[in-house]
Length: 376
Image 1 (cartoon, rainbow, N blue to C red):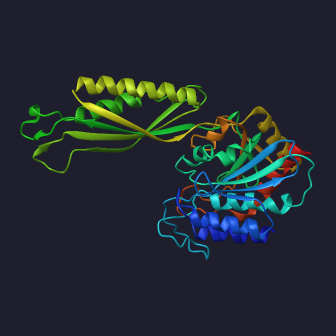
Image 2 (spheres, rainbow, N blue to C red; image 1 turned 90 degrees about the vertical axis):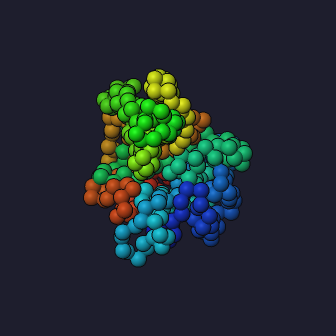
Image 3 (cartoon, rainbow, N blue to C red; image 1 turned 135 degrees about the vertical axis):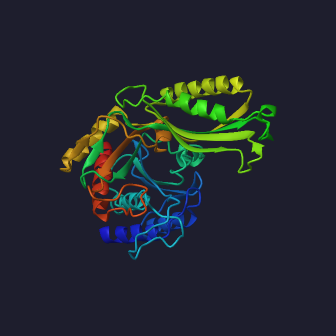
């Protein structure tokens, strides 16, 4: 069984697809599930999503085990046989391995061993853009499943291999990105007073936004604002610029604190643009709500880790990256954990990263243990 999952993982790795374009990935997953005994499979769930259902009884809890399908716009530098064949696209977050783990559960689930409940293996598209889980939640076929619990995991390079990483009730941050567009008026560079140049406003905004940072991760009001792109005017040296833009990604621990931070950003922008006689518009995108571990789910993850003799690595603070699993946290009881991918494994999103096949059995042990506890 494990060898077939590793073969699947490497096939998925060699043929990565970007968020929203996971058509062949979905076909490979569907065919693997169907060829190995899954007889009830939904396709095009929330876009390119796939869901395999295993019903033991009409009563009892409905458990969803979710993984991601999409890859990243990164050129792979590895030269192993399963290297990505798609230029500038590769699985650098380990979603290929996550899919292999969740697919592996079918070998166990297809034998009717429980007297109650239902298990759904969900392969979700478009995690990297923060849109996939939200789209799943708009699909009536998923909503009709009426899940009681949704669980997921992520591999974590830099942590002891096979260890189980837990935080408090918040696993990962609320993340939002925005683009701010400033509009003034062009003028001749020799007569800037006849136009409205956004340069000073951009400089003031960067300094003002920097003061909103609360870097203490133990502070509930933690706020991180990272400038990622800026542009103003053109390379035309006889022209005083009339337009500019500024892009940020921002992070807080909670959805509530994110709204507070957004309100502060809007107030500062209003004030500074009015001072410099500029019009502005702001575009908010790539939203990832915080991933929340329900108390019951967190306790269950800990118990299953102990039962399997796996080392638990508790973390004092949530992770600062975004994970769109948080959309599920807003509606259902959710549980999310990390699996150590090895101390020397390259970091996520690095161009030499590759998912360690050694932890495929670890992920299967954790998810199957969770299912057993809930359906026993």
